[in-house]
Length: 291
Image 1 (cartoon, helix red, strand yellow):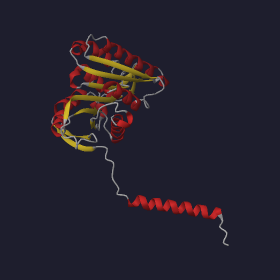
Image 2 (cartoon, one colour):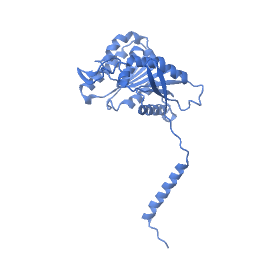
Image 3 (tube, one colour):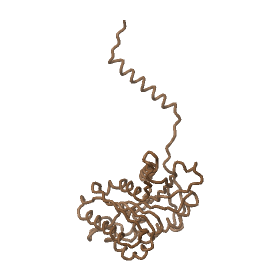
Image 4 (cartoon, helix red, strand yellow):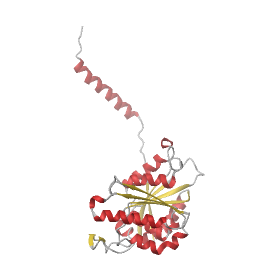
């Protein structure tokens, strides 16, 4: 009788099974998972061509009568697009109890974010110390926001089935821009998600601007979520950025306007570099939660 050596036969069995699985996988048709599609728009305001990416709800083509809220995402590079779209689709799926509605996601690319997202022409500085030379490449926020309002909104609304709900998501300098739009054009968006904004910009710019914007905010109708990170590890700059962030939250909360709803969350265990998607997650649920 032939005796089999188990030690030699077992690896052969594993190899055979593995090869069979590979063959089975190869027989299946391959299908790409498409997250978003790039589009271009020629801007008369910016005097250049700009790119934006659009992700449509999974059932967009099947529900031809449905119109959807739009989520505009600043710093719309490929990594952020994938992360935000994955989060939005997951939170709006029955697997996660459909915590938020489905969205059309528009990610706005910025090749020169320092210029696009800063409201004044200045260096990034604190207490007289220049942290980043930006004076000659900053201050373009007004023009950039006008491009979004006048040209991009029109382009999106003409191509896709949108409704009246528009949300803006911004982190860091993107949070600075989102907060600046809230102060100057609060009805441009219905929802603002501001994650760890650069509050030290231009020596507490946002809180100083708030003092000039109270009348505008009295008539605003918007939902606002502000997330703050713990940046104490970088010393006084990080501590002051959070302090001014808290001041901004408190200032907004003093507005006697029931249609301006402000909520916030401090992420004590997260730093600037790690807080983004947690702030987006909690912010989306806070702003759009359906249950």
